[in-house]
Amino acid sequence: MEGAFLLAGASAMLTVAGAIESHRHNRLLRKIPYRIHVNGTRGKSSVTRLIAAGLRAGGIPTCAKTTGTVPRMIFPDGTEYPVYRPSRSNIIEQLRVVKAAAAAGAQALVIECMALNPQLQSVCETRIVKSTHGIVTNARPDHLDVMGPTERDVALAMAGTMPIGGKFYTAEQDHLSVFEMAARDRGTCVHAIGDEHVAGVTWDDLSGFAHIEHPDNVALALKVCQDLGVARRTALEGMWSAAPDAGVLQLYSVREREKEIAFVNGFAANDPESTGHNWNMVVNRFDQFDQRVALFNCRSDRTDRSIQLADACLKWQPADRYVLVGSATDVFAKRALANGMNPARLLSAERLPTENVLNNIEQQARRSAMVMGMGNIAGPGMQIINYFRERGNQSRRSTRSYAEAA
Picture 1 (cartoon, rainbow, N blue to C red):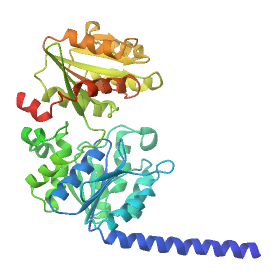
Picture 2 (picture 1 turned 180 degrees about the vertical axis):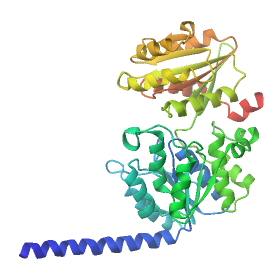
Picture 3 (picture 1 turned 45 degrees about the vertical axis):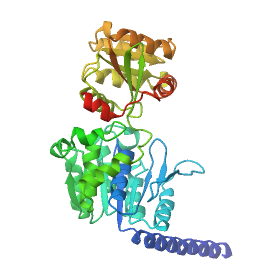
Picture 4 (picture 1 turned 60 degrees about the horizontal axis):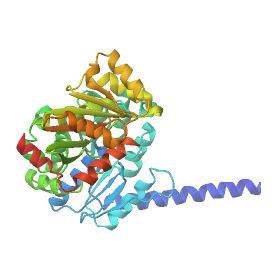
């Protein structure tokens, strides 16, 4: 009997403690009038940074937290620090983020959703962030083991971060109906970023970035900033000056024997749809190069990804050459050749040192070549990035230079 009383007492104490903690958290949330919850398959970290930079430029004290390649907390003066994690990532860290933002006097908090599990995505929104503005960049077939099995299921999972009685923004067009349904349920207004909004992001707008930025990400961020009272030009200039996320498409350029080799680090996107989107955008933007080389870094423990990319790449803008590095490249090669790839355009360089691979690409180019790395970053992927970092520091050019040359 005594044990039962002790158990009941402990349970009651935990309930009270939980209620007190919830009250404290809600009080902190009320100190931050604009709470912007960013979700999506690709571009979450970039959009989080873009919005935060635009709002800061407009005079709104803003904190941001990204959960991308390198999780970071960004403060109203633009300084940023790594997010400390004593063990594995846990959505409870978002409570600390809210506390830090309130302590910093932020009037806006732009926070990237860090949950994959559909139930946890909903908990992040309804119990922790309680956003005034919700964002889904896109919904693509990734993490299907958690959010799948279909792409529509991914959209349904992300709809869990729909604000209650707020505003919602998305550049996703294929599954817009899913978000409209969730918005009706939660009494939220939907702002769809369509082709006309993306087309409104000009070459001049994009050339201000020192990295390759997606026009749909910029259009999405600009819409949010403008709705919060920041003039378009002011927001854009703030975005230009902000530090990019570690996972953005970085561009390096080196000169070897009077030939220019540009390398685009596209390893961060590893699902076929996002990878193809990146490739097509880069090819269309930088069409002045003699050769366009699609370089795929394969892994023996990721052969399913090799097969997916081999199936997809022939549907993209054509490359002049397809170069395979890494391990188990034969999986990609056999699938691509079976799909109709010209064998003369395919180079399997699994056993070649990185420098030899890049020398081969340089020798094949008449005056210039654009190489985009895709698939996986591990092993040869990182070696290739380091190769261009070491040789391209003095000759790296911003996207402004390329846009002006195009």
